[in-house]
Image 1 (cartoon, rainbow, N blue to C red):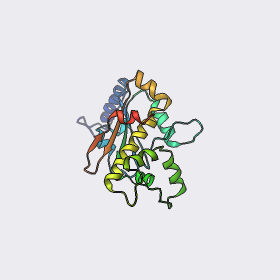
Image 2: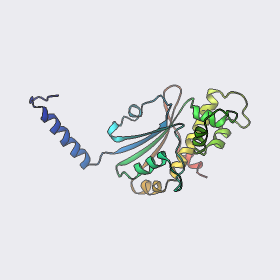
Image 3: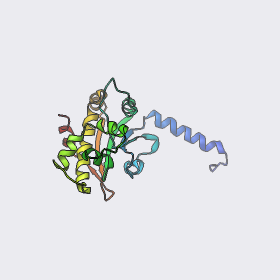
Image 4: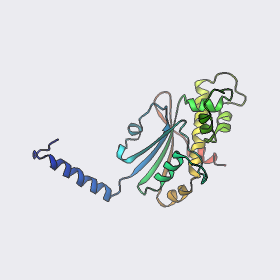
Length: 202
């Protein structure tokens, strides 16, 4: 594409200059963690350009607990991003009608592949989901029950994230901000009160 001078390199030079300037002032970045099946666009929701947004998707927007003896690409990705000094925000976004959460609550489902069962166990949220949906739930869960459980699940994932070794230092020294979002069935984003996930640490 040519700019007004008619020289194709002029536009590229301008782009390079902008790139240098943005690096000089260290453009702020964010990490967005959400579910594989969530029908949402992190770029559209956050209004953050793809060059400044790390995206991590997995089944159930799960944040595995940080453990030195576990090999996990999700854990590695989070630990890697936490080392980026430009990181200013981390968002974990759950969603309405989450299939992963329904699997966590419905213990009668024995047809899940073993790898899926093991992955869901890393969420550490089954008890919180069951308590939220109602003890002794029988039959098919309603959409509202699943969504209540999904919010509880989201709180536990934020609590898991807060236990990563680098989190305390980044929050204290860099003012790293945490956000727990829930994408509801109306296509609206709800923000989970911080006390909900701080209580989940205990």
